[in-house]
Length: 341
Ligand SMILES: Cc1ncc(COP(=O)(O)O)c(C=O)c1O
Image (cartoon, rainbow, N blue to C red; front, top):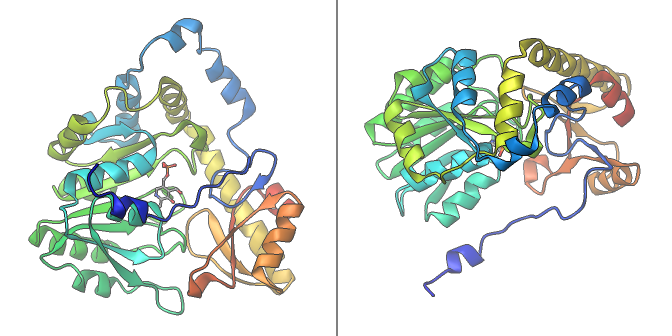
């Protein structure tokens, strides 16, 4: 067996508990899920013959292309956007090159750095939890093969301006690096940078159906990029990358814009409700964009998180210094936020 020490040293936190019976405010899923009548109507199409047939993603991709107003050639569907991130590293992460992102960020970026032998150049948040886009720009040197911009970022919901993103894309292009624009929290941000993926050959936009679209269980994400890049993804994917249930639910949801709008409205109302409750009780909180918010509890974070768990509510805590005194709470409907509070 060849040397696997770089794999053995990867730190993975596997959540072994069954979260189903909890109010899940720890992983930025949609806490309430899709309307039951919508789910029931889609389920009616799941016949024995449907389940016996290998999946085909063409109808889903066609609907997605219409929804986004892009060509189907710019798209490919993936088994969650996590898998799309992995493919980006497999394809474009040159061995021993550098990956640039802010830190802390979505934890799988660091995992893929270790698997694919990339050095992780971490741009730390400032103490006030803002990001210095200039520092990202300056870190793009010849040894960089991938830059990731999460818009909004996870865990802190900072967003970038168009000018900042454009400057980063141009600099990355100059050194032959690709820019991943991770829009997992699309729908909770003031703008999308999807048009950059259509314009620049070194830009890859990733989105997921796990957050706003409330389909985390099904594992559905997609890549939007230049057709030349999409062709590379298609070459390395398994024959059937996304399962048929995910494609079916994804397609039906995209055909139902009213549901998507309602999910967005519920989220906005939930955010307002939670902020009002926090203000009334004099809690310090930090909110930018994304379907999550940081709260500084009045007593010890670990104890508060444990007590919430004993009351059937899961929230996220961080070991990282700038976040260690806060809990992160996923935002749900006003009713969910009242229950949490
Ligand atoms: C920024 C970001 N990107 C990607 C993902 C992966 O999402 P999924 O694999 O469910 O599509 C997540 C999940 O939390 C995330 O926060």
